[in-house]
Length: 176
Figure (cartoon, rainbow, N blue to C red):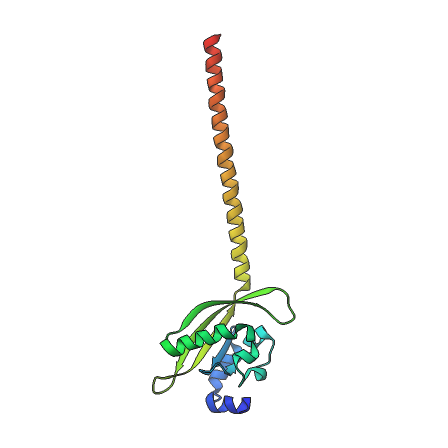
């Protein structure tokens, strides 16, 4: 079955929905229960470097084999429990880039008219910059805590030295 046929049969074109997919600031996809891409927006395709057309009708395993096992497990869990899976962080590199990127993903069941799960909606938001800032804040906090610890140790040392000096003056006064 060709990609366009799969898309038309299982995910009919709806102008309002297509507009959301085309303009969303995050990556969006709709997967069949067997992990085939039935819909995907351009933003999400930028992550793996495969066109929208290159995804449609193909399985996750065919498009992004490195993430396939994890994605299949999430979809299987949703199909079994009917519950969404949210807040999953995914790390990887974009094609042609060496820098590691991070996305937070949310997976929600799509139910048919009779209540059965007919697919899974996926939303992916890039959070690379936020993660970088979090690492910088952690590093700055760790450095500040280490400096505070050194300051406390120096202060304790000075207090101890002052006590010894006072004791020395007292002893000198007694023997004088």
